[in-house]
Length: 239
Image 1 (spheres, one colour):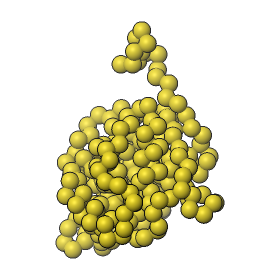
Image 2 (cartoon, one colour):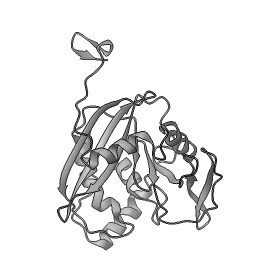
Image 3 (cartoon, one colour):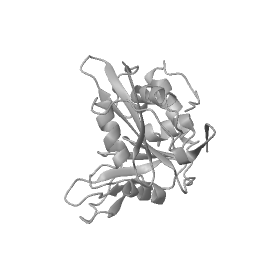
Image 4 (cartoon, rainbow, N blue to C red):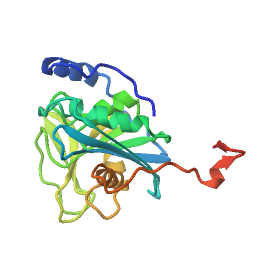
Protein backbone atom coordinates (compact mmCIF):
# COMPACT_ATOMS: atom_id res chain seq x y z
CA UNK A 1 0.00 0.00 0.00
CA UNK A 2 1.41 3.37 -1.01
CA UNK A 3 2.11 6.10 1.53
CA UNK A 4 2.13 9.75 0.48
CA UNK A 5 4.85 11.52 2.46
CA UNK A 6 3.25 14.91 3.06
CA UNK A 7 5.62 15.99 5.83
CA UNK A 8 8.43 14.80 8.05
CA UNK A 9 8.03 13.30 11.52
CA UNK A 10 10.94 14.92 13.31
CA UNK A 11 9.03 18.03 14.31
CA UNK A 12 8.52 20.19 17.38
CA UNK A 13 5.17 20.51 19.13
CA UNK A 14 4.43 23.93 17.54
CA UNK A 15 5.33 22.50 14.12
CA UNK A 16 3.01 19.54 14.70
CA UNK A 17 0.15 21.89 15.55
CA UNK A 18 0.84 23.88 12.36
CA UNK A 19 0.89 20.70 10.24
CA UNK A 20 -2.47 19.64 11.68
CA UNK A 21 -4.06 22.98 10.88
CA UNK A 22 -2.69 22.93 7.34
CA UNK A 23 -3.69 19.34 6.57
CA UNK A 24 -7.16 19.72 8.10
CA UNK A 25 -8.14 21.92 5.17
CA UNK A 26 -7.50 18.99 2.80
CA UNK A 27 -9.77 16.48 4.52
CA UNK A 28 -12.65 15.43 2.26
CA UNK A 29 -16.06 15.18 3.92
CA UNK A 30 -17.68 13.63 0.83
CA UNK A 31 -18.24 9.89 0.69
CA UNK A 32 -16.23 8.01 -1.93
CA UNK A 33 -17.06 4.51 -0.68
CA UNK A 34 -19.89 2.63 -2.38
CA UNK A 35 -19.24 -1.10 -2.69
CA UNK A 36 -16.03 -1.93 -0.83
CA UNK A 37 -14.40 -5.27 -1.46
CA UNK A 38 -11.90 -4.95 1.40
CA UNK A 39 -12.20 -3.10 4.72
CA UNK A 40 -9.23 -2.70 7.06
CA UNK A 41 -8.81 -1.96 10.73
CA UNK A 42 -5.79 -0.17 12.24
CA UNK A 43 -4.67 -0.10 15.87
CA UNK A 44 -1.61 0.35 18.10
CA UNK A 45 -0.52 -1.47 21.25
CA UNK A 46 2.22 -0.11 23.52
CA UNK A 47 4.87 -2.73 24.25
CA UNK A 48 6.34 -3.69 27.59
CA UNK A 49 9.66 -2.18 26.60
CA UNK A 50 9.55 1.53 27.28
CA UNK A 51 8.97 3.57 24.16
CA UNK A 52 8.14 0.56 21.97
CA UNK A 53 4.81 -0.24 20.36
CA UNK A 54 3.23 -2.50 17.77
CA UNK A 55 1.18 -1.11 14.90
CA UNK A 56 -1.25 -3.52 13.26
CA UNK A 57 -3.42 -3.46 10.16
CA UNK A 58 -5.87 -6.23 9.33
CA UNK A 59 -7.77 -6.52 6.06
CA UNK A 60 -11.11 -8.30 5.80
CA UNK A 61 -13.31 -9.00 2.82
CA UNK A 62 -16.74 -7.40 2.77
CA UNK A 63 -19.52 -8.16 3.51
CA UNK A 64 -18.46 -11.58 4.82
CA UNK A 65 -15.67 -10.06 6.96
CA UNK A 66 -13.33 -12.99 6.56
CA UNK A 67 -9.76 -12.21 7.59
CA UNK A 68 -7.55 -12.05 4.49
CA UNK A 69 -4.35 -10.26 5.55
CA UNK A 70 -2.58 -9.14 8.74
CA UNK A 71 0.55 -6.99 8.96
CA UNK A 72 2.32 -5.74 12.10
CA UNK A 73 5.32 -3.55 12.85
CA UNK A 74 7.11 -3.27 16.18
CA UNK A 75 9.13 -0.08 16.49
CA UNK A 76 10.07 2.71 18.84
CA UNK A 77 7.44 5.41 19.17
CA UNK A 78 8.83 8.52 17.48
CA UNK A 79 6.91 11.18 19.42
CA UNK A 80 6.02 11.73 23.09
CA UNK A 81 2.49 11.33 24.38
CA UNK A 82 0.82 14.72 24.05
CA UNK A 83 -2.98 15.04 24.04
CA UNK A 84 -4.19 16.07 20.60
CA UNK A 85 -0.98 14.93 18.87
CA UNK A 86 -1.61 11.19 18.97
CA UNK A 87 -1.24 10.88 15.20
CA UNK A 88 2.40 12.01 15.36
CA UNK A 89 3.06 9.25 17.88
CA UNK A 90 1.13 6.43 16.19
CA UNK A 91 0.91 7.17 12.46
CA UNK A 92 4.46 6.09 11.53
CA UNK A 93 3.88 2.58 12.92
CA UNK A 94 0.49 2.18 11.24
CA UNK A 95 1.90 3.47 7.96
CA UNK A 96 4.81 1.04 8.14
CA UNK A 97 2.34 -1.82 8.59
CA UNK A 98 0.22 -0.53 5.69
CA UNK A 99 3.25 -0.45 3.41
CA UNK A 100 3.61 -4.21 3.95
CA UNK A 101 0.08 -4.94 2.71
CA UNK A 102 -0.40 -6.64 -0.63
CA UNK A 103 -4.12 -5.84 -0.57
CA UNK A 104 -5.23 -2.22 -0.84
CA UNK A 105 -8.33 -1.70 1.32
CA UNK A 106 -11.22 0.41 0.06
CA UNK A 107 -11.92 1.72 3.57
CA UNK A 108 -9.97 1.81 6.83
CA UNK A 109 -11.52 1.95 10.30
CA UNK A 110 -9.09 3.59 12.72
CA UNK A 111 -8.98 3.32 16.51
CA UNK A 112 -8.89 7.08 17.06
CA UNK A 113 -10.54 10.35 16.21
CA UNK A 114 -11.12 11.85 12.79
CA UNK A 115 -12.69 15.31 12.66
CA UNK A 116 -13.68 14.97 16.33
CA UNK A 117 -10.44 16.71 17.25
CA UNK A 118 -9.67 20.27 18.41
CA UNK A 119 -7.90 21.04 15.12
CA UNK A 120 -10.09 18.67 13.08
CA UNK A 121 -7.22 16.32 12.28
CA UNK A 122 -7.17 13.26 14.48
CA UNK A 123 -5.38 10.01 13.70
CA UNK A 124 -8.05 8.76 11.27
CA UNK A 125 -7.99 11.96 9.21
CA UNK A 126 -4.20 12.14 9.24
CA UNK A 127 -3.88 8.54 8.05
CA UNK A 128 -6.58 9.07 5.41
CA UNK A 129 -4.61 11.91 3.85
CA UNK A 130 -1.27 10.08 4.02
CA UNK A 131 -2.77 6.94 2.44
CA UNK A 132 -5.21 8.79 0.14
CA UNK A 133 -7.85 6.32 1.30
CA UNK A 134 -11.32 6.67 2.88
CA UNK A 135 -11.09 6.39 6.67
CA UNK A 136 -13.48 6.43 9.63
CA UNK A 137 -12.54 7.43 13.16
CA UNK A 138 -13.86 4.97 15.77
CA UNK A 139 -12.76 6.13 19.22
CA UNK A 140 -13.67 4.67 22.58
CA UNK A 141 -13.59 8.03 24.38
CA UNK A 142 -14.31 11.70 23.69
CA UNK A 143 -11.54 14.16 22.94
CA UNK A 144 -13.66 17.29 22.48
CA UNK A 145 -17.26 18.36 21.96
CA UNK A 146 -20.51 17.84 23.83
CA UNK A 147 -23.39 15.45 23.30
CA UNK A 148 -26.56 13.98 24.71
CA UNK A 149 -26.67 10.33 25.72
CA UNK A 150 -27.88 8.17 22.80
CA UNK A 151 -30.77 5.75 23.26
CA UNK A 152 -29.91 2.25 24.47
CA UNK A 153 -30.99 0.60 21.19
CA UNK A 154 -28.10 -0.48 18.93
CA UNK A 155 -27.85 1.93 15.99
CA UNK A 156 -29.00 4.91 18.04
CA UNK A 157 -26.70 7.91 18.11
CA UNK A 158 -26.42 11.49 19.29
CA UNK A 159 -24.60 14.32 17.55
CA UNK A 160 -21.20 15.32 18.89
CA UNK A 161 -20.97 19.13 18.69
CA UNK A 162 -18.02 21.45 19.23
CA UNK A 163 -18.35 25.25 18.96
CA UNK A 164 -21.59 24.86 17.05
CA UNK A 165 -20.15 22.38 14.53
CA UNK A 166 -21.23 18.75 14.28
CA UNK A 167 -17.92 16.89 14.43
CA UNK A 168 -19.11 13.33 14.91
CA UNK A 169 -21.66 10.97 16.38
CA UNK A 170 -21.89 9.10 19.67
CA UNK A 171 -23.03 5.70 18.41
CA UNK A 172 -24.52 2.80 20.33
CA UNK A 173 -23.22 -0.33 18.61
CA UNK A 174 -24.43 -2.84 21.21
CA UNK A 175 -27.10 -2.73 23.88
CA UNK A 176 -25.96 -2.07 27.47
CA UNK A 177 -22.44 -1.07 26.44
CA UNK A 178 -20.72 2.30 26.23
CA UNK A 179 -21.08 4.05 22.86
CA UNK A 180 -18.31 4.71 20.35
CA UNK A 181 -17.29 8.13 19.06
CA UNK A 182 -17.58 8.00 15.28
CA UNK A 183 -16.27 10.75 13.05
CA UNK A 184 -15.28 11.47 9.48
CA UNK A 185 -11.71 10.48 8.77
CA UNK A 186 -11.29 11.23 5.07
CA UNK A 187 -13.39 10.70 1.93
CA UNK A 188 -16.55 9.77 3.86
CA UNK A 189 -19.48 11.78 5.16
CA UNK A 190 -20.79 11.33 8.69
CA UNK A 191 -23.80 9.28 7.64
CA UNK A 192 -21.54 6.88 5.76
CA UNK A 193 -19.09 6.73 8.68
CA UNK A 194 -21.91 5.69 11.03
CA UNK A 195 -23.21 3.19 8.48
CA UNK A 196 -19.88 1.49 7.90
CA UNK A 197 -19.11 1.25 11.59
CA UNK A 198 -22.43 -0.49 12.21
CA UNK A 199 -22.11 -2.69 9.12
CA UNK A 200 -18.82 -4.05 10.43
CA UNK A 201 -20.11 -4.97 13.89
CA UNK A 202 -20.52 -8.69 14.54
CA UNK A 203 -21.99 -8.90 18.02
CA UNK A 204 -19.29 -6.90 19.76
CA UNK A 205 -19.11 -3.25 20.77
CA UNK A 206 -16.11 -2.74 18.46
CA UNK A 207 -16.39 -3.19 14.67
CA UNK A 208 -14.79 -6.46 13.64
CA UNK A 209 -11.81 -5.03 11.67
CA UNK A 210 -10.83 -2.94 14.70
CA UNK A 211 -11.41 -5.78 17.14
CA UNK A 212 -9.04 -8.01 15.18
CA UNK A 213 -6.52 -5.19 14.69
CA UNK A 214 -6.44 -4.80 18.47
CA UNK A 215 -5.79 -8.52 18.88
CA UNK A 216 -3.07 -8.43 16.22
CA UNK A 217 -1.37 -5.44 17.84
CA UNK A 218 -1.38 -7.33 21.13
CA UNK A 219 0.27 -10.37 19.55
CA UNK A 220 -2.85 -12.55 19.65
CA UNK A 221 -3.19 -12.82 15.86
CA UNK A 222 -0.11 -13.55 13.81
CA UNK A 223 0.78 -12.03 10.45
CA UNK A 224 -1.18 -13.46 7.54
CA UNK A 225 -0.47 -13.26 3.81
CA UNK A 226 -3.25 -12.66 1.31
CA UNK A 227 -4.07 -15.65 -0.86
CA UNK A 228 -6.53 -14.80 -3.66
CA UNK A 229 -9.45 -17.15 -4.16
CA UNK A 230 -9.06 -19.49 -7.17
CA UNK A 231 -12.06 -17.93 -8.90
CA UNK A 232 -10.30 -14.55 -8.85
CA UNK A 233 -7.26 -15.75 -10.78
CA UNK A 234 -6.73 -16.63 -14.41
CA UNK A 235 -3.36 -17.81 -15.73
CA UNK A 236 -1.65 -16.43 -12.63
CA UNK A 237 -3.21 -12.98 -12.88
CA UNK A 238 -5.41 -11.44 -10.19
CA UNK A 239 -8.77 -10.04 -11.36
